[in-house]
Length: 420
Ligand code: ZN
Ligand code: ZN
Image 1: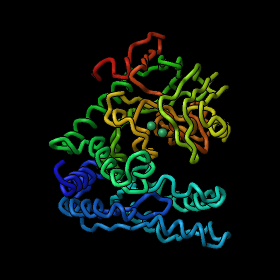
Image 2: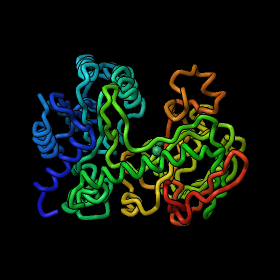
Image 3: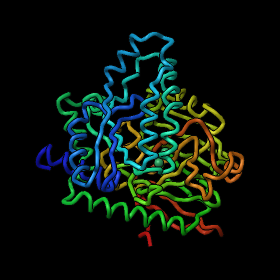
């Protein structure tokens, strides 16, 4: 990349063409994480680059709503205690109307992962609950792909201060840009073409796994000896989704994972995490979990053991797995070796599993099942969903066929065979 302008315009083009895949005549609404609604002012240069690219792609109207984290902090420090369940209904109403009318949405993360670290947990909790209640209808529209939408990230000083705390303050935004450029393949001669090829390869891998119908995966690596059952009717997913109107889009950029649900009662053995987990403002590191018949029976952490135990004890489903995802060790996010304190990047850094709820769409007819049927089929339910990384260059994974025959799936962290 030769200049910031070129980088912004390549990133804007990628968000418009591959992320939301904006259609001529569509409106585009740019927002930030739903907690404070608006996109951070730090992302203004990218928002403008996206808007320009969107109009060139035929957008009829591009709008952004801004959110200022400093203003959010002032509220936490000075607003009356009993006011934290207040939330303006006009924003979720506008978002629902926008999505129902089939217009596109782009969310840009450029936030401070530590913003609320020092605020009283009960106040943070009250605000989070008020927000999730109010935005649930919009979230549900998106999860049913009512319209084309995407989530990307932009560098901000506060985010860089957390990720690159050991580097000089003035280097942190350039370092985040470097990371985003590599992970979003903006350094390729034609980033849009590079993503078409990458998303095509992910789809081929997804189709291969769906056609193999493995009954289980077995993992072997340092500190890991795990058998993870897959339920009948599990569906592998990757990369791209399809909107109700029939337009493919990429909900997350970057994306590296192929994922499905494990059987909530058929996980046995020991698994050791290969990267630290940032949870509830604490870093859990050097940890492993032992499973018996799907349930965590023992946890050990060199750092953050009580937080890990709290996570597992959240509810019955928090002690079981709801997601299994495969990511090759050679993926650009894994190679960066950086902890981003942001799911968009960290979840794509390595093969992982998640404690807690399973996605309904990773099971055939899962969205039509009632709660009991979903659980009987092996789907896990919980109020939480927390991913942790178990992949490395030393991990071997076999797929076990329905007749019990194992076949090599990943060797030393890489796909063992081409997807064909
Ligand atoms: Zn995942
Ligand atoms: Zn996940």
